Amino acid sequence: MNSSTYADLIRERYDKASRTRRAREALYLCLRHLVLDGALRAGEPLPPSRLLAGELRLGRSTVVRVYEQLLLEGYLCGRAGSGTFVSEDLPPAMSAGASRGAAPAGGLLSNRGREIERHATSSHIQGGAFVPGVPDVGLFPFATWRRLLSKNLCFEQRHLARYSQGGFGPLKSALADYLRVSRMMHCSPAQILILNGSHQAIDLCARMLCDPGDAVWMEDPGYWGARNVLRANGLELVPVPVDVDGMMPELAPPGSHPRLVFVSPSCQYPTGVTMSLARRLQLLETARRHEAWIIEDDYDNEIRYYPHIIGSLFGQAEQPGLQRVLYLGTFSKTMFPGLRLAYLVVPEALAEPFAVGNAELYREGRLVEQAALAEFIEAGHFSRHLRRMRSVYQERRTILRRAIESRLGDRVSTAGGQAGLNLAYLFAETLDDVELARRALHAGIVFRPMSMYYDASRGSRVGMNLGFAAVSAEDITIAADRLCSVVEAYLVKR
Ligand SMILES: Cc1ncc(COP(=O)(O)O)c(C=O)c1O
Image (cartoon, rainbow, N blue to C red):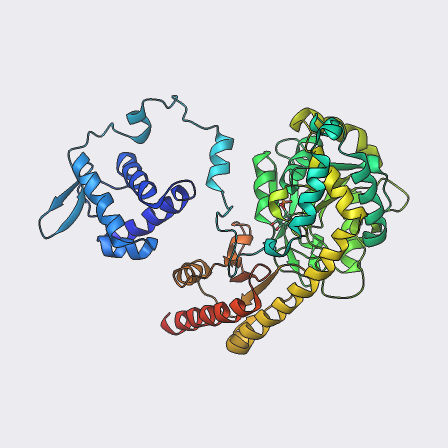
């Protein structure tokens, strides 16, 4: 391996370690692990400190000091004038696990645990241009929220400090009213479960409705978070293509029988397209035929830039016969992601078993926040905040569109943008969008490459998923300009 290949390996490990540690310690631990693992082989050269510092966006002195420490401890050796090398004196048995002496024979993690690690996609970067899916928490009415929280966090309201049984009733009633008006859904509060975020809701659905090995149809491209949770439950992920009308059930592999289908019909993630009525009806019919359940992920329908309301799939499925749609909503985009409050509306037949499953698996609580949220909704703060944020986001989205499309022209296209916090651009030509994202990161811009939303077993399109919501209008123009320069330079030099 040459030293620049090593630089890639080190960067990958360093990125993971730096989520939880300071730069110098993270780099030290990452290099030590790589040596002990044997990933950096005895006698091989390390990247020059200047090159590695540039790759990791660290000061050169940080890298030099880490090299010096490892030289001192004997992991590395230096040859005068010819660089730093992995020491040749380490015993071969000195693997990371053996050196700590703690790893059980079968490894630290279960197969499932290793799979979760292998597919890890969550990012520690949660703000700035253009991290997708992040709302502008700076515009949230914290003073109001604090007042409602402290009103419910007191001796008089001490019953809210206990375990919860089925969530806070008034919040579920407020949600049932809200969903009737805004999503054309008819459900009783008993059909609503309050959960700690969408991932937990998806986990509950997988555990209560599926057995390991069952097939789940996933939008392709689709939400990596749902994919990871469902995979962790031992389900077989079956990618089903998406076009401008949403998921295409007719293109599912022949002979595949889904137990579960995961879709985001109002604003498909990440493309942003809205599922057409014809496709919705086709999907409901397909689910009926296969006796499959559908999870409708309605994560950001509230942030829409058109005046009319497109009803939910759950509402459209309210015909005679068994309701097969489970509706998933979250407050991560409308309030703030750290709140970790989502809700699942289940068909009547599932209300009781899901309530039991929720209580047994996760033990409910957080009634103080739920009480504050119920009041936040009932007193009109929620809809006021939404109205304000819709117009803020609409302006930011327009600025981003203009900036990207005026410079990149028909080299990029987007099919969505009618709702949500991100714009997904696809490139007309083939290129390496992961490499492009790496170069953009060097210029201080973060985007998610579109290829990472596709199932690895199918061909993927390439592009950039750009989140605009948490960036001020002025910063969008500057950052978009910088991003376009990176893209143009990449396209020229390829
Ligand atoms: C498609 C999609 N669904 C749901 C969520 C919300 O997840 P949570 O409620 O766990 O924050 C996100 C967040 O990024 C998302 O992108």
